[in-house]
Length: 136
Image 1 (spheres, helix red, strand yellow):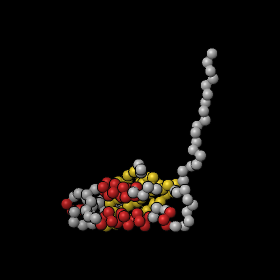
Image 2: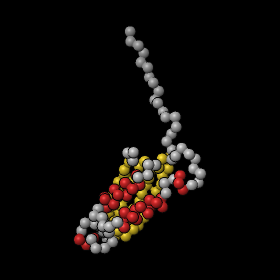
Image 3: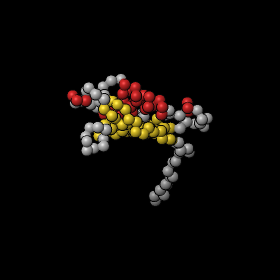
Image 4: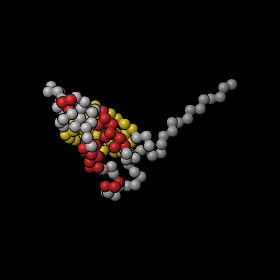
């Protein structure tokens, strides 16, 4: 005789993970970027878009900047990356930007889009978009 098969309910976590999206849209900066000779001597307009999935803390926000991921600090960090010198690839700029965002342990995931705006007269932009996850 076979014993009846027991079906266990799917375990659901007691508390859902609360997240918020912090984003920067259409940050346009003059950047020394590119591998071609004509790109070595002058800045190009580059547009960046950042979308961060941020873990909300256990504490209830007391309306303090210290309780949130500050987009002003993120924009400042991107400006610092750009100011540090010539970058060959949009992929490199995207990776550096993503890594900077993920330094904050609350940022669980980041999507970075980098677009060069003046490469082709018949295209609005060219570029790359990456998504990275915090492994800490």
